[in-house]
Image 1 (cartoon, rainbow, N blue to C red):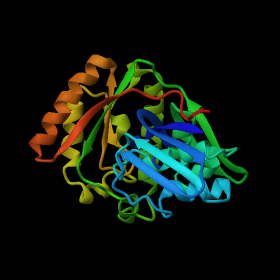
Image 2 (image 1 turned 30 degrees about the vertical axis):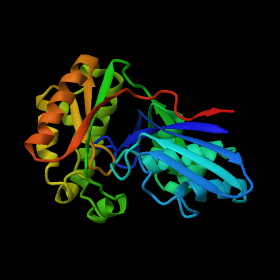
Image 3 (image 1 turned 120 degrees about the vertical axis):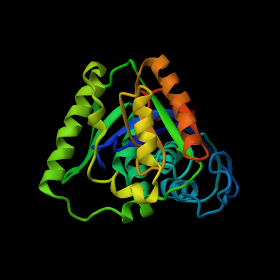
Length: 283
């Protein structure tokens, strides 16, 4: 079987560990029975050793109950850049291996409900872990919105990004984030009411600046170039710009490349569409 899953940008500013958006970068996985285990990888992540310890191997073994599998991976999603590469890979592998519930499998291996949910469901989602289990809701998304992602040539592990976060937050900061997330959701549904302040956050972005000091200037430059909102993508270091239409996104992308050069940071700027299909399985 063959499966494809999209990348995802989580948090989206104030929606820490709750919101995520599927984006048009993909990982494809093909799995067929074999006399013995083999794994090959092309594209992003191909430098990782293709042995039994690989995430794809671990997910496939867990789903199939054995290791007599040939696994082929082709990925466009940069690793350790805040674009949900692990969640997308886990979802695609689970589906290609025949899992009845690829979302459940991906979430159990990757640990981030919102990234796994976006890669499986597509579109803009919110995810919550309730007593009865995980619940995912698809949220309205204005079809005219386009997205630009700045992808620095610098890795940032999620575990490191989480290590700098405060264990407790003040009531004022909690209210701040709730109010901005309400503005953000309204604006993502109708871009005409989207304001730049909707991407502000006090739970994670400011704390992570110590790991990525160029981020504030880059975010400001994206808005100055015409982005409606700019924010971190997941735990970073990729940054997301929410733009009005394809022409607006192209201008922001060009300004993003200039901004990366201005702060002497190698990287690239990509114009991406929202992926509305999510996980796709082919025989």
